[in-house]
Image (cartoon, rainbow, N blue to C red; front, side):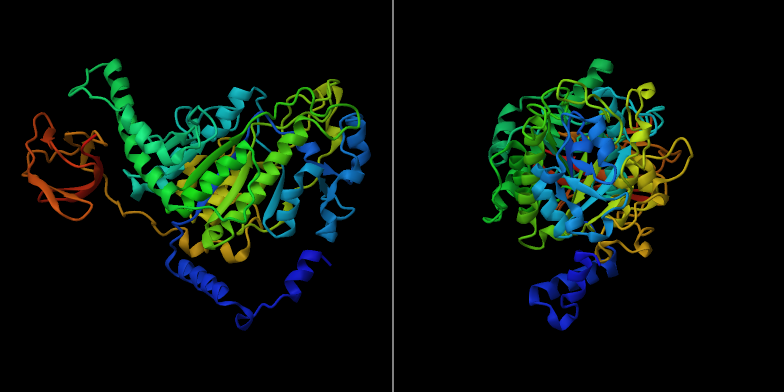
Length: 549
């Protein structure tokens, strides 16, 4: 019998055995399921930049002799490994019999605590082993064969602007990135700009004041040219950043970290510590992206033959200890019920070592999904080293799980997304099949899985008819324009602008000239406004962000 199953069978399962806080949590789940509101849930992505060596992270014990043959000097001795069969005895001797690198003790503990799932051999159909191309493929939601999912936008951006369409525009960032000076292409939407903000430093408390001091005077009008378009984008991004910065600073100051978290003193821990504090501070950001670099271990992955210490040991230790502390922090209260994390890496490493105590670019690698809602387990089986031959440069090529399957599973089963929002993020261009139909089973605990009856409910604002008007710029400074998209621009059309407190700010009738009306709005406070436009055929409302920019 599985040790984990034995623990579950012997623990008190009735409501009478629950403590008050556990009862409250149970009622919370029942309430969420009854109204299909999962808007508090969030995803944390950890990018393992450089291509993590999966075979020295999750060691395949059932083919251990083949593993040693491929890696005579850099293999992890079995006596030093953390064998998962000690937790789940059912995998012992099977093709799922694996062990963790000894530096992965924090992740081992999470597996033991029913909070870590391993997905074996994750990749995409046509692997590109260039760092830059591969991470772009991951960020855009593509498969390595073409750019049919869009090379100018990212899967996170497309998903967010569809699944959370009711939020736009917003006075908080729906995405936050930490740990890299470069903004991820993954957050770039097809229609919305400024979906995410990049906090390259950890000084979130003073982020707003620093950004505010950078703002200058904006031009009243922009040239009708490519230069003008680019300038408008820069100005809009700067304006949004200042608005977002206030929400970040407020949440950081209102939030806190659990004193018993024991975050280690490393960069990834600092990033995750900031994420936890922002979440507890009440910011409504939906996706976080943090980064740990250095996984391009062509050399000195270990210090010498038979040595465990080296670059890879240090990286796995940083990842493992930071994630364990992060989960201790989140699980100190109910915040942990609403967060799932997942690792991503642009590719894995070759099966064979390279002679420099390292490994070269490979194809597939394991992915780790973690969090209180996660069901500990293993999806997939150990690799077949017979695939790795001199003819294919010692590559393990079989993709057991497309990276988009793991994301689609979390999108629907954890966030409650309908299939159309998943398809907007990515679709299988080879088969034209939806990844919503290729979900990974048993990734989440049953009590956290969104019921199928919630998938087709519109969690945003109903918008069944096409728009009759286009409002721009959004965000705006001291004016906006309304463009008629129908043949009814000759009709009498009124508008009302109200602030976030429901107070009427401005109103009247729109005067269309060549299909466009101009409305001046000087001296408005920065905030969220609702614009309602009405004629004899239709009434339509728009959420605008602006004023005082």
